Image 1: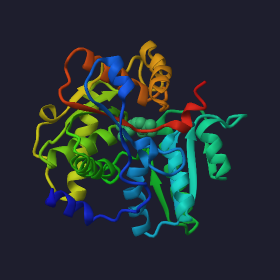
Image 2: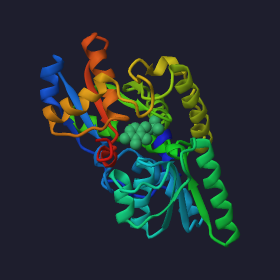
Image 3: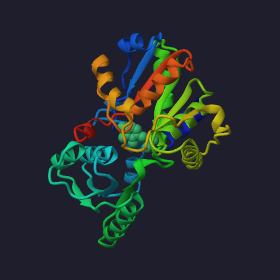
Length: 328
Ligand SMILES: *Cc1c(COP(=O)(O)O)cnc(C)c1O
């Protein structure tokens, strides 16, 4: 623990999130699923804007931006990007200029996260219906033109998934371990979403360096197991370089990568995930959304019902509340 916390403390981190996030018991869900103890780690309550996991990444990414004397934060994502909105909120708090770049057309009516961006009066660029590689190319061109104007831009893309961005969930592992010890809650199994793999990387790496107090289960919402594995391994390599501590584990031995519940992939509901978006808040009063947080619960339910989970289980709620209002 000392090695890891010392390494983390050597990296500049801005105190943006309200930490530790609550750890609450889901008693009605337990009754429904017939399982003794299920907790929710409320990373939908990270304290800025609509909340969510990206605030943890931004503590490190924007720490690096300020260390580099950046004066403009460029952030690229889809229209309903949680990263873009949370970056815009963090920039508001820090008094930094924020520019968002979206692949999609400028909508006639701003909904969900785009409404929040509008209220923040964040400068937005709409690149039209192109893929994320084209959007990133546009963002990079914008970065270069800002540099030519004498600005100091810092670019965040791909959900903030990088060696630096993944530190948010490395630090999360230390937080969860301390919190479970303080509260006397012996959490064993953690379920979290796998998108670009930033959260997964932080969890897998942080947990491994702490001696594996938790069993990490990643439910993919997008990629196949093999693709997600490659994404995680690549980002682990980047984290190793940032922190200077080797992972020294076989990925397969320190996490379960689950890809059976992603359906047609990113942003496409399955019948089960669509039902979960209603059922979960009806039981617990906590809202989830369609893209990420519902599919991980569907996977978690299946694993619990198939008796594949042991000990106290924890659902990591990664947020996405802002996007929910554009999904119906
Ligand atoms: C970005 C995001 C994730 C996935 O994080 P990755 O690091 O891309 O795997 C999960 N949930 C929500 C709400 C997100 O915004």
